[in-house]
Figure (cartoon, rainbow, N blue to C red):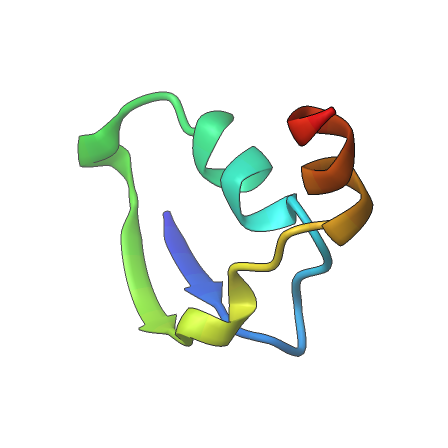
Length: 50
């Protein structure tokens, strides 16, 4: 399975959700990766800190 993780495809939390649903680490290939695709919902961080 090929996965492209880039800013145009992912919203907050979707990159980690996608990776967590893979059947195994050996079953996929990241074809492109943009660090800015890893997004965090700022409100979630506020809730965690409270």
